[in-house]
Length: 95
Image 1: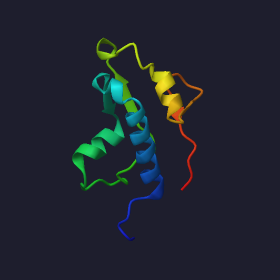
Image 2: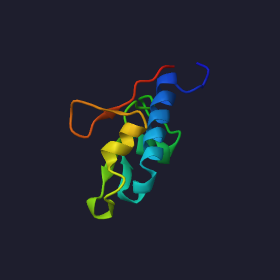
Image 3: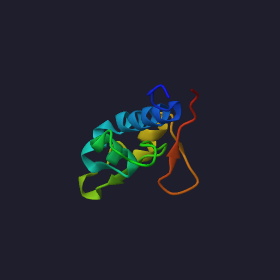
Image 4: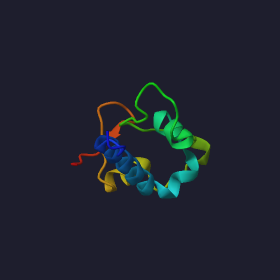
């Protein structure tokens, strides 16, 4: 194994960064949660499973959310597409 990160993980992190950049004006209302948050903060460890995930989870604090930009519009402008579940977004991307 080369030690290089899995290309799918790199792509997933790139899409997360695209989403966060698109939501830049709303960052004070957002918290990265889930596995990507854990891996970001813990780094390398002695995990039995591979330390990567291809999804990202953002929690929204409605008390901190501004009326503009609207989240849906900002994500759409960044090329993200609403999924079939509420709050689910994806981006078509190639390696």
